Image (cartoon, rainbow, N blue to C red):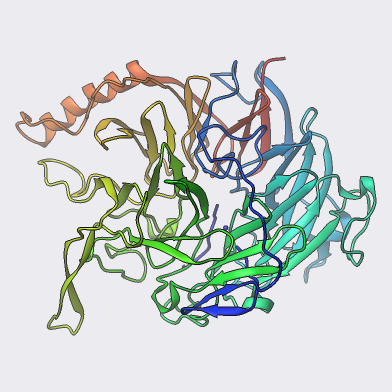
Length: 567
């Protein structure tokens, strides 16, 4: 990455080496007692995506404001953050947590005197905790920086925490998995007694697992994993990636995926399967699902492969290549091969996932997949390698052939050669996580297009261009779909169980480009009239997902955390 990563999963444990990179604990067997992942988040909002399915759909809350204007009648409170915020706010136990940086310090000790004699903020990663009812600041965890290559300046903490009981789990900017007490020091000092800071507004650290020290991980620009908790285990992606030059992978044998004991922070298993094939970095998150009675945890890798493992042991189950075999990765994003930024979703017995890249690489051809891994093992990709030929430039030209064991239900994206289009593909790279509800899936592209698809077939119902980059995801609640943009706009769409087909790009009778654009605008207006409820402007960019918990809508802009609800 050339400048910085703003993003919005990891773990490790020990002992027996199993077939190239998976370690299994030889200690007591860890029981995993979890509810089946579904569409309804566990109340209130305890991890990225709501629950272990990661589905951005809330089927519980009602009477959520449709026009949440900052400073308007539905605003309950607003709290200051730093100057960066990428994570999804998390709510539980009467608290709201959000990651940010230290550019607007809350503590005098986090300010330094610069060479000119002026005060300036110390660059730190920060996790802030607020009272959910009032927005009152309660405590914060602060983490020093690693340095630009591993921990890009002023980006803060990108990880969305997970909460279980009175424990908060997150990945710090220092590539450590951290467990803190949800109540801070209000209920005494829990776990680790050697915290540097122990004031009432400091975090009470229970344990911390250093993925660099313990696993040899080399995080590229930022560790951004949002932990998944299933039973006694915590799972995350490590961010292991390239060095500053983007052509050398310093630690190919370091784990890409880890599993920790959530109570102790001890490594349970690790996996390094992406190995030397990591293209850039690894900033996505794992998901949990049960298919045909078989529990599995699914990890997106930096090589563009999705992999499933037995949750307790890390034993390999299946793998899926989300890129066509002919795709090529090019440094800087000019190629056709991508990794994952968005998180896989499990809904209705299927897995939904899209490909993306570092947002600084901008857009390019993308692919969005629906797969059904029920009863599958081994390679379940759409294609297998047919042949590899050498081109004149010395590069490999790979040709694929259909895979008879494929788990693909449908695929959306790829080439689009219709006349007068502004690009030659139908779906671009995405940083978003899918929202699946009522047989409809909403997925956004980085460049700002929201796509509404049939969740069973992949048929497109409609798309709408928000005219600004989308870093977060579409979020369903109370019959509405919320999605925010880098311009600071919050769009609210009406959800329809039976959407109309309004394809603004399907204009076969267009005489020329001018006629095409004229008719396209007519169809865009049809989508607006049918589905767009409100567009709300804010002062700051929004690079996160609006979420709802306990009847309150939380929107994190770069600088502020808003709470909206009925008073």
